[in-house]
Image 1 (cartoon, rainbow, N blue to C red):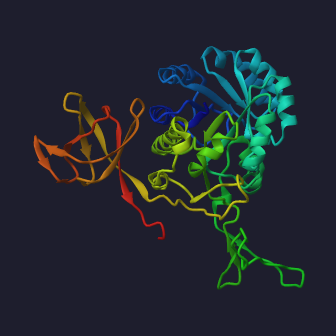
Image 2 (cartoon, rainbow, N blue to C red):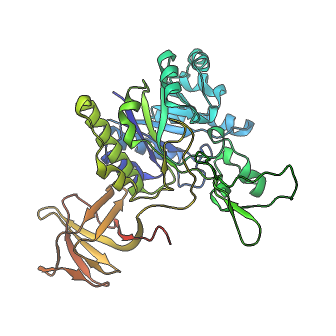
Image 3 (tube, rainbow, N blue to C red):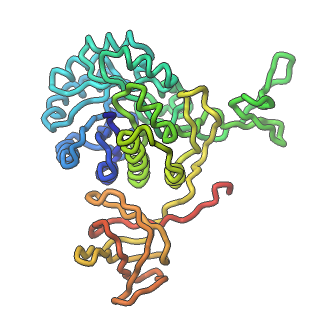
Length: 415
């Protein structure tokens, strides 16, 4: 059975992905992971992370995947005892020098995609060093992944959904060169996502690609000022929801969702959709079919448009901006939840109506998406409520006092 591995950037996200069927979670530790700008966890939090995950029978993998200088390498090595005692299952490492020490502390050593593992010879060497698993390079095709996994003496893992970096296995110097903020140390400012302007000197040897043939991948457009603009640094997000059977037959042990810096509702939605798809295939592979609603749901949360990355050929198109159908608007907070009648009392600071879709998030609740079907004020049913009041909303899932409430507002993707 394949493992569904989901991201957790904070305790709300942790609960959200576990509630939606994650078999395992991965998360960052301050100073040692590739999402330095996310909230992350401290070493003191790790016992609580382990405890929460154990409630769901889920495994826990701590990301320590930055390029380690001498100081950070020693600090991480010194912290291995504390990490092990917190009952975390394993570490995701970008530095093979710490495999032996990690394994000696009873922790699984998983090799990061930053290591750019692209062949079975590397996997055999990693096995000798004590690694339990390797995340394969995102530049591999699905056929190559299947071949490598078949020969591998250790578990393999691949990304199936989320952001894709312009650089090989994410090893990029663009942010560092422009701003002194290193992507390889988790501090990327993502200048690649911007719209770039190209200039060039006229001459016989200069070539500009205007994508005038069918199979061109990079779109370059001319501007009135004589410059040329492109988003070719910014790939679309990976989405493999339509290819679960092909992924399942590849022999990979773990399917990974990218997104530790994204919101809890993103983690909840994406994890839930892939959980449903994987379970559907495992329960009845002969009659498996893609649910048309899956893609609709995935486009409802943050995305830059979707692509299959290098799994079948080269990426289809490029995109910079959020292509989701909705934006989240902060509109209220839970005052109380009444278990007997399954209703939440919510203090709102924006208008609500029957049919609105809301998201309720909290550290224990995780992330719950709900379409309003029934509302009451002082025991009387209402179809619309104005901001500044407390309203009771029927919701079958338990939420909790002080949980945050958001309304999903349809956005104009083209504008």
